[in-house]
Image (tube, rainbow, N blue to C red; front, side, top):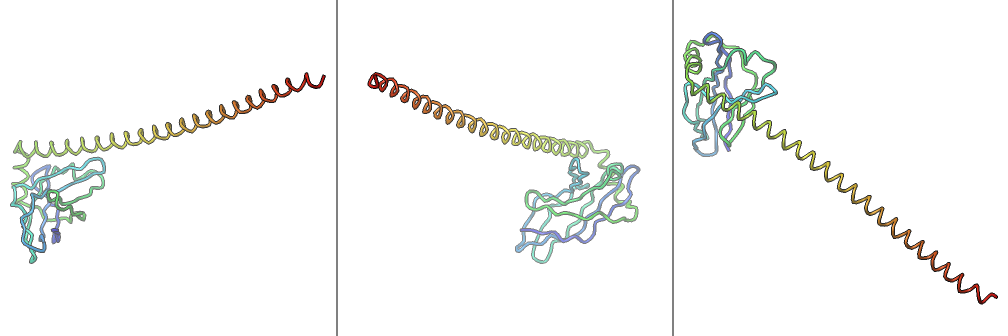
Length: 198
């Protein structure tokens, strides 16, 4: 399994209305291996936005000595200004690393190019929108599944209650039939005993 050792995680002003988050660290694994593509996850508590690095960076390579890796992630300033955000680095389906809050960095002129490219590139914007929409749909689907599971549990409880009521009704019917049969037998015995007494 690969692990990521974080060296720095900074947040810097870039182009107007944009900031960049810069990650640097090393990937380690027991043997050299090429990892899937990595992206940053920014979660505001309501949705998780997947942010691809810009410009695109090579796939991480993990090895016992530690494969150096860095990436720049451009984000709109207004997104970073909303509430308490949680950050994570996701590498395919291999590993997810929770990240601390980024520290303040100096203005990043190279980040301005990345932010401008992200703002201008319809593919980057579309990819981020598609990722956000996919995450929204996943959250909605998970909520629907939870609701369906809750309804199924409620239905199971109602079915168990109905079965218990039917069992009680059946027991009451059998008890009533036994009482009626006993009463009928007692009446028949009294009827047959009455002529002999005369």
